[in-house]
Image (tube, rainbow, N blue to C red):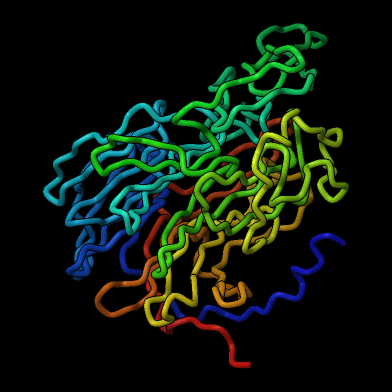
Length: 441
């Protein structure tokens, strides 16, 4: 069975954790300045009655919370400290990246990035070349807009933005029929094709030219936003991004779901090495494996076929370094500063069934995982204390591990509606009391 290898992963209890600060509304990102003060970004998503608009808080070493910025684009997906100030990624429409001084002064760097779809402008990472790098999420699950957009708690919108290719693509004549949600007639339907607006199609053989910025892509630019360029394409949703001490750029790619107009099952999340000019396969390959492979046969729809007719013109899809459990929602990672770059700690947000997988699928994630960069082995750290780990960072002064908890957030199926059940004051920052590591042997 495709995912049976998961049962062989070593796992242990995370150990005791303590609360650094709490009462936050669905935080996503943590950063430290050189003095050890923490900065926490709230997403700004209005789950559970939370106030709309992203916020950034300063959390002093004494635990005091000071509001630094508010009314940011939602969701805030990333917060990074670099050269004395913060960089805030926002998944608004359009997506944007802002420069935030520690006195609260904000300067916009980019505000022309794709937005208004399934996924967003992601976190920034600064490279050895002094450039800022960021991920740009896909607008769709697998390349075709579908009715699933109406069930996504952060979207709930049709029509919505269309995907933008980073390399030239030629389309196959793939067409999907769905119910027409805009009329009262239960028998009314619409036909939608790839890289098209909901209810629209294009002809077989249509070539779509590459653009910058693209979706499902990694970009870079100067810190002031100039000279933006594509680094790599075909990464569905690079939510976590960062450099190893040796200069390699890594991305966490969240795998496709069993939902919508082109559902696909059993797709893992991936850890990837981002290489310039590479293709990572989306929307036709899942971790270098064709989407047509029987292992990806969905429960909620027909087996998918290829959307792109010009695979021979594209680079060979890159293989992932690591596969995580399907739907575990690997988010962000940090390099253990005492490991010489050999151990990563990664948050596993957890599944959002029944929105992202067929009803009845097992609950996964809601844990941390260590990854060893020498052999890419995994070791899972479980805990009942942390509800939804979404970011991890090591404190720059004492080296302790801090974990951002998004908070209580679950999906419930009520009749034909997927409902979000969330507590808008349950987000917090945890400190792990004992340094986690791989078991001996």
